[in-house]
Image 1 (spheres, rainbow, N blue to C red):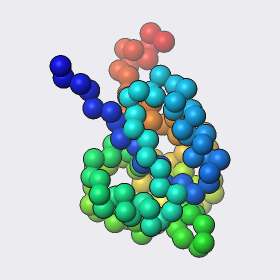
Image 2 (image 1 turned 180 degrees about the vertical axis):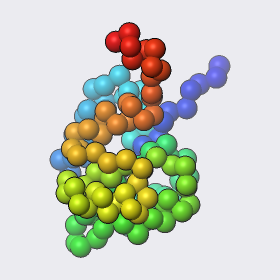
Image 3 (image 1 turned 90 degrees about the vertical axis):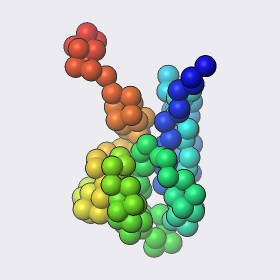
Image 4 (image 1 turned 90 degrees about the horizontal axis):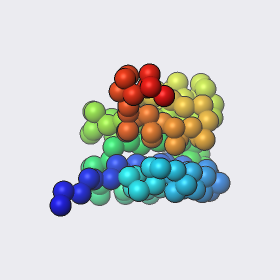
Length: 134
């Protein structure tokens, strides 16, 4: 039997409440069985994960990761390594999101609550015909 591969999602985020929200929203949605969510709560952890895995479908980047760390340089390096990877800026500050876009993110979202909607829209798109029926 040919089993469908789960979509692999990396969330780089230091806020525990956002991490819990992402997990709960995903588990409670129709996508829960189709997505493998991996969380990096620090820049060091994100670097480690990205050095071991090259098969992510999408990465959500928070910019400010505490202790003065930002994900800008890692975003830039990841874009160079994976030119076609979907990357989404999730900083709450619009000016900082724009900066993330300059460093290689494809998309930006205003609220971290939109992560689940972005996963749905970017990884499980529907056709125009399907959208018109809804």
